[in-house]
Length: 314
Image (cartoon, rainbow, N blue to C red; front, top):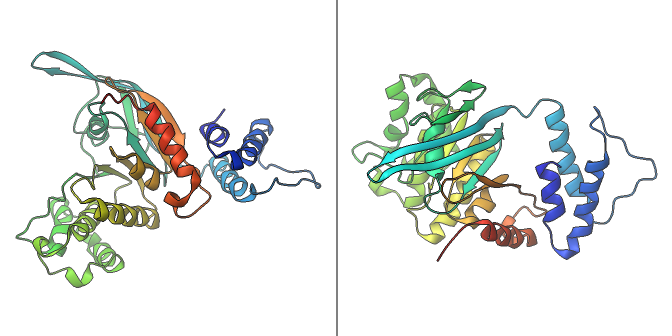
């Protein structure tokens, strides 16, 4: 059974469960031909049409080859040397991320979430297993990934525009300058382009940091607790803002977070890691009926499910 079928069968309030199970059973029993057909007298149970169309589009997209594989972890393990001996950080991690997906990674502290991003970026090498970005094995730092860290790390002696162009200057890719200017205009920072970072709010600084990451047009974005330095209210607004930008720019992203709500609100899928050594404990496809996810009854159900999966000892 696929992850989408699993999520449809397992997620949903009692009022939605019949419809969700119906869709799951339809996919389970249908044959993977080039085009699914329905009997002429077929009727949808009440409330299933949106979910049916949404999931059928996903399924047909996979069949048509349009969901290109961007990232693959294949049996990845990592052991490093510490003062008191070897530490096994990751153990046999396997998952795939496709073009346009936003995937949140969540797990207990010390389970290897940020380590995974370092491996994807080529900053570290796995002890065993392989990581592929766009079909090529990661062998070091490359140009296909963009890394957005916990702090914005904007340089106060440079203007906002100067900060977002910094990576292009280092890589000598100034042909992307027009693209950067279009991002500044599209996302409300153009009128502040000549300001210093200290003159901007925390949310605006994070937007600038994201544009700096997008400037080189990376195929895959890595966000490591990118909103953790913000206060709660600002964090909600900025996370929603960044999510909209990523979707509008049709980017693929892996988002590491400790915040379950943040992970659910931003992602198409949520990967739950076990306690150290980290491995994939659960890979959950997120399906919502409402555009505002936090208002959807499924939001709380996902939250409770993920909380139970986390190995958290208080």
